[in-house]
Length: 381
Image (tube, rainbow, N blue to C red; front, top):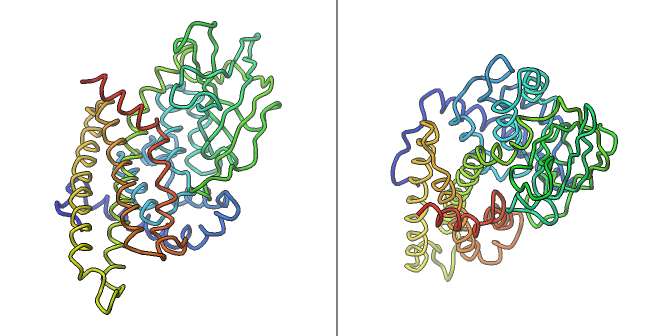
């Protein structure tokens, strides 16, 4: 399917890909339908992933990781996406939350949390979004008021990935005075067994049904000051530093899903007969699929270029925004066209393209809505 061979990955990377793909095929895919019914994955898959070394792979060996580069994270994202395993929240746990603790935590916090995250004993989430604050993080209303050796945390967070199963959550809350804006936001490490911390039931979503997304409620939760992540008032700056990678992960998953959707649709078109001839024999089919192949190939080249820049610490925030915007919009076009080629079957969830159709829509929303991406791109012009 690829027009241009990928040169990012070494033989060791491809060995890892085969190993992880086998894990996905044998221990995730057969159970994913049941997890969709349950609205969350089986917790055992987390400890199993930890046993096999598939969690927090970029973390230092001293904390239970493998000290690997982010190409390993890329591989896992791609393979989970191609398998349609949207319920497994490994990436947010390993590549977002672990990075916050690793980059902004002190030695005690790293030693306390990271090894248990790498083993799968501890499942983590990050709580930024609120009912009235999504892409505009400065609008959050959750507060953490200093009180002696603690902060008293109050507020509600929503759409929290891994929220239902999480044992530890990084919470963005205002510790400053009214009017401080971004300078008043801090990050707190909050344990799920803290008095006053409660979770809602998994939210019923259009797609990503196995992903345990829920609301989190904080009512006078006393959080030790020692659980402050980074500097007080430095939360917004820390969040901004990690958003480029988060947005690139959305692009990585988006282009992988577009490639897999195109591959499966081409296979379907070659086998599906219309008026006695394979669907792929009709010029309209060939031309429309050719258009999609060209767009997906261009998207793939740009995403791989962004990954290369990330590895060299040269990925600019607006480049990550471009990748997230373009790939999520492209994915929407690809899956919509591919559903059409499947006809009625494209509307049946037993077909991968139907699942891709409902799962892909959120790509244009999370990680910052695409309208926000356009604003970020425009500001950098």
